[in-house]
Amino acid sequence: MKRLITFVLMFLSLSCLACGKGKEIKLLYWNIQNGMWHDQGNNYDGFVDYVKSMDPDICVWCEAESRYVTDTCTKLKIPEDQYLPWNWDILAARYGHKYTLICGKRDTFPQVITSKYPIRIVKRVTGNGDDIIVVHGAGWAQVDLGRGQELNLVTVHTWPQKYAYLAQDQAASAAEQGGDEFRSKEIRYICEETIGTVPGAEGQLWLMCGDFNAISSVDNAHYGKDPSDKAFLVHDYVRGNTPYIDVIERMYPGQFCKSTLSGRRIDMVYVTPALFGKITSASPLYDGFAAASRDPRGQQVHNFCHPSDHYPILVTFKIK
Image (cartoon, rainbow, N blue to C red; front, side):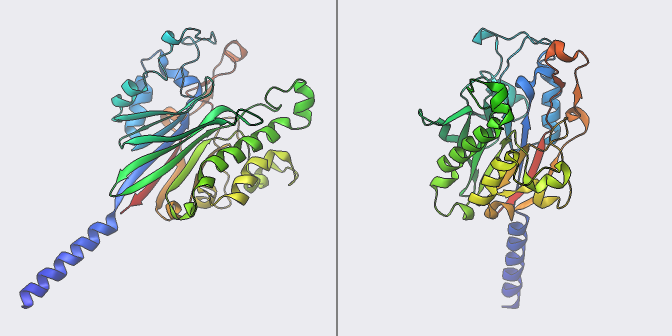
């Protein structure tokens, strides 16, 4: 009897230990500037090696389309000449990802998800065909993580200009911060069409990431703007009207972690409380292949950067 009790206790201890370890999931987000223009002439070898070194389970790529002839700012006009997004399945396979999905695409700046786990699209968000336009598109996908758990993944890339989309007088619109107002309408619509449609989403695994082209009021100690500035509209909406938590802000309290070479933090990863409790690490990546620099030719190539004008963000979480 004593031996049986001992065996049972050992089995339960090992089971609990296994449960405690959980299953680690790594998500890598990055705006890769014009479909990784920097490395397309190198057969994407540097990019692939870098992604392999991070060993992510899920990747979210912004600007995931080839737009220019290698090493120039001459636009690729024929779809057949564009390696991305049409060949993401081939490229992703080189760094170990079996599944790919063009998630948000309305123009030539799509978001693409690649993954070791199955992905399915729930909704592509492009606007309502009336008064709301999501210029670059957004998307809501679900990733099957196994063990009966699913990650709701929302990809975002909002309008980048100071003036509103389709503004007749761009200078006047910029002076009135029309771009900030336009972005705030985009993000409201994106949230309403995704997490806003699911009651109890705060208790589910949701992650929203992307290039928001907007700064957050939580970083205003760095920016020094009037608190009522329209530049904060996008993230004030997310913070005040959704259950999302700003991962980098929460993980690095009181610190400013830029996400672009220009020194702004406009790339964000948001998660619900249910997912935040599972995060073990999160950080922007500034070194190695990701270290950004301006192309020395300047305006000759639209001030493009190498490898991108944005930095990647890596988030790790554990599920049971």
